[in-house]
Length: 115
Length: 113
Image (cartoon, rainbow over all chains, first blue to last red):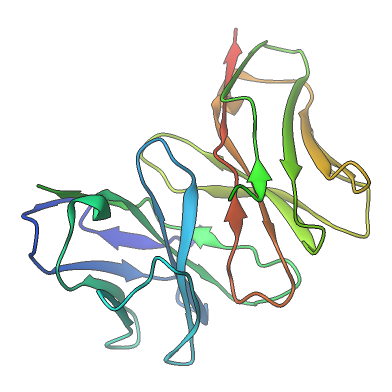
């Protein structure tokens, strides 16, 4: 069964450092997403991406965050200068349609720990 | 701002019995509701969904019921199996959103043999 692949599975970084989280969405999917889950809290939407543009972003997705699809297969989330509160599990997701069912396929997540 | 609430953090059920997971929402503009299941060290996996114009959707052992007047939905698992033990997330979205699923905090289901 096709799956969304995320790397790294766990990254530890110092506050203020830049971090790039990588995702390989399902090959025929056109819509890409990032969500995050801070420990003990709910899964929160960060951003959606289609046709090389951000479709929608949440209040969390401020100027410190950016997304990119550098080639035909990867989808990345960059945090420019990490803060302690960025420590969370970051989930990438993709879908082949958007609208009626909005069924997203999620990756296993990348755990980010900011010290 | 909890638009989607799952008030029970955990639920324990005996194998073979029914599991009922509940979810409440506050935004009457939601068009679709979904249930995702999550095992440790994995991402959420889509389980079942329901449109806001329906009151029931069934898929095998899983049935979702929607009560719009009460802004309440529930997931029934019958019969429950030990492999169903996971965290279950209720989620909702509006048709105009671009992938912005609003999740509840999740309910951890334990099915005991």
